[in-house]
Amino acid sequence: MAGTAIGTTGREGEFQALKIFSGNAHPELGTRLAAYLEAEPGHITITRFSDGEIRLMVEESARGNDVYILQPTCAPVNDNLMELLIMLDAFRRASASRITVVMPYYGYARQDKKLKPREPITARLVADLIVEAGAHRVVCVDLHAEQIQGFFDIPVDHLYAGPVIGRWLVQQGFSEAEDVVVVSPDVAGVQRARSLAEMLSCPITIIAKRRPEPNKVDIMEIIGDVNGKRCVMIDDMIDTGGTIIRGAEALLKRGATEVLAVGTHAVFSGNAPQLLQDSVLSKVVVTDTVPIPSVKVFPKLTVLPIAPLLGDAIRRIHTNESVSTLFDGWR
Image 1 (tube, one colour):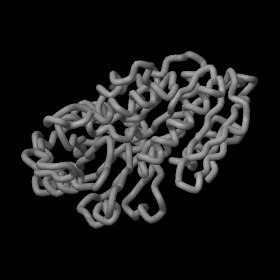
Image 2 (cartoon, one colour; image 1 turned 30 degrees about the horizontal axis):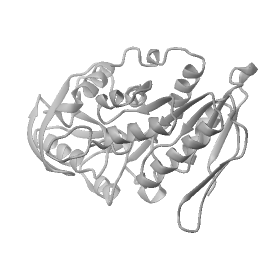
Image 3 (spheres, helix red, strand yellow; image 1 turned 90 degrees about the horizontal axis):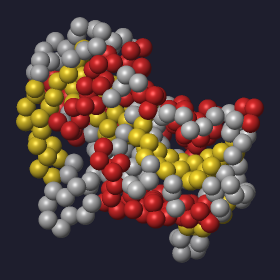
Image 4 (tube, rainbow, N blue to C red; image 1 turned 180 degrees about the vertical axis):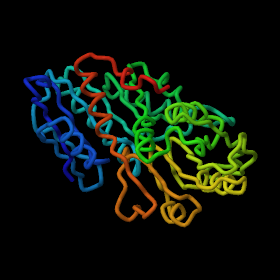
């Protein structure tokens, strides 16, 4: 299977030394990113040996270039992570001047601390692997936990999809409406919910929950008034859909008139798309940080493009401009 490489010559030579290579995890996003940067595709080939090992060949010179590798480590996470590490090794040995990993979705992020004895911290392990393989910089979107940035010994640019989602909600008339409230599905996501609430000029509500085991949730309490409100529930990822669906049901029991779910990463494990479609949710809004196969697309789903955000960040990194100014007004 062939990957995608984008060699940018740019507007008036702006990007003469910049090249973006996309692995097989999300080639469609690589194509959209190329179009946003007005870039021409380059050449990289990713195939398999007969025993299943990844065989990679960079088909053009990368010597002295500012290389960006686009590769979300989504499902199949082990294959995509290994492919990323092999790409890093190839470009390090090809004498690229700087290698930046662009990971719209950071796999293995949910084990970011030890909660029980003898548990691994996989988020730190992945960070160590990426650094050791040769990365000079990492770009991520909505990490599952902010502290993952500290697991790297190299610079990390943490991008937020909240403004992308917020602008869509404003266009849909959710801004400054008296009957709108933003809901955090757990205590850990309060800051994300508060930022969106400030963008929409509306109050926030918090769902306090207990998780007896992974992917299972017991709703405990709703902190805040949702009676007669349209609720916008925001999370970093939607995996099995259990948290979002249970939360929506609890909100409607408390008098909410509508519940809209928004999230950055559409992981959609198992039969999550069908469960979400059949749920009480009025709409599910996500970005395309991970590929969404046609079989996982359902009528209630709206997908917002993340390529413009990634493109703006890459342009600023390459020209040594501030990336944080992209999020002025968003925390």
